[in-house]
Image (cartoon, rainbow, N blue to C red):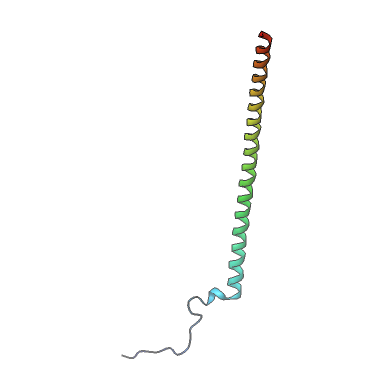
Length: 82
């Protein structure tokens, strides 16, 4: 039984295609698309948090103003009874 030895290379070895120009460019473009999507997601989250924060702040300010009105009315009634 004879074993044939192949003296030449049959093609790029493992990992060599990783560094081929087209493959590198394709991976970088894919990475850029992923980063752009992630940036869009983060921007959307920031916008939603700002809107929610503004809404909560407005509600809190409204509650404080109502409380201030109640206190002012209480003081006025107290002063009227004196």
